[in-house]
Length: 352
Ligand code: ATP
Ligand code: MG
Image 1 (tube, protein in one colour):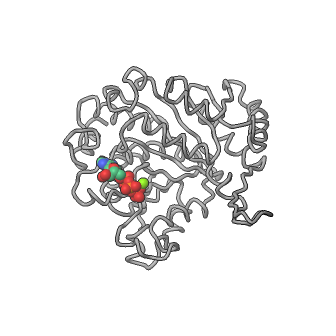
Image 2 (tube, rainbow, N blue to C red):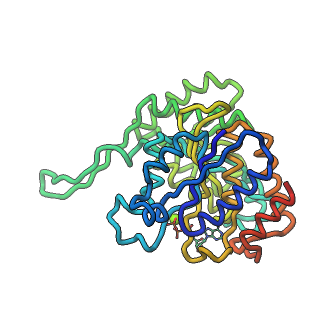
Image 3 (cartoon, rainbow, N blue to C red):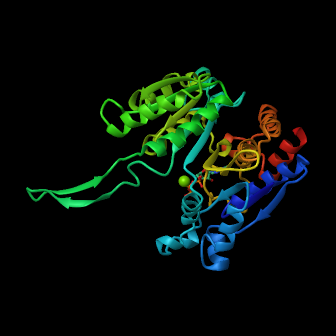
């Protein structure tokens, strides 16, 4: 089984190194990790943020472990050469249409949430956001109305097949969890949402064990703050998911703990092909100082083991080691602690 390791810029290489050590420590036979440059680092070495060799290594792998891209030195480059284009290019080239963001409050960290500790403590959900469709990709432009008024417009659209494939990802995710799925839309006013709801109801017939409910997005935003513990898997489109997944992240509290997966349709020998990355960026302000919390990347590696390599029990082991490390009070500076990058990596390894 092949893992492509793309460390990227800023703290990317530091946090990725710790996640690689964790994977190595599992002592799995038959795992081959191959590193490739991406982002500003790739631009500086090869003149492009996503060199063809990197894309090839990524596409020939079973799963991609991605650090972060973003480099202040590249701010004045033309848009297509900027580091951030690398992640957009990978998502597009590899048709990674399903973004999964788990949001969970680890025991002992309830007070870091923006919510009351007793409310925060109950959070354990995954948001499944569609990434390749919706209003971001519809026809857009400016026009002049009959009365001379200037107008901007963005067409929101979804096709049945786009909704169907993301719905399957969400139902499969729910099957591996508490088997509750909440599909979020705005079907009272949007045709895209009516289609979304119809297709989700149809796909649900293939997953009779999953309890399905539908919620309007405005209500979902409210419930995420009022009673987030009620959610297990939340399925939603690109625009609503963009907003709700950031909202859910902050309900958890720390940027250094949040992992994500972007999945495609391609099946690997033991799961689904995907790209895994922490939700934080390259953090140029602390890069190179050994201060970054690598846990978000280590938890992303656990998602890779689970979703792309079919190694659920190994993923559980890694997640339990991270939880134990936190419970033992080994906290990075993002959580008000003093532990550095390698120290946190060592602490997780010791508990593995
Ligand atoms: P980008 O544009 O690459 O997303 P950003 O500036 O928007 O960068 P981050 O890079 O995520 O956002 O950084 C936001 C803040 O959080 C910074 O102050 C950074 O130092 C801090 N931060 C981000 N990741 C971590 C981490 N893993 N550990 C500790 N602090 C972090
Ligand atoms: Mg950012």
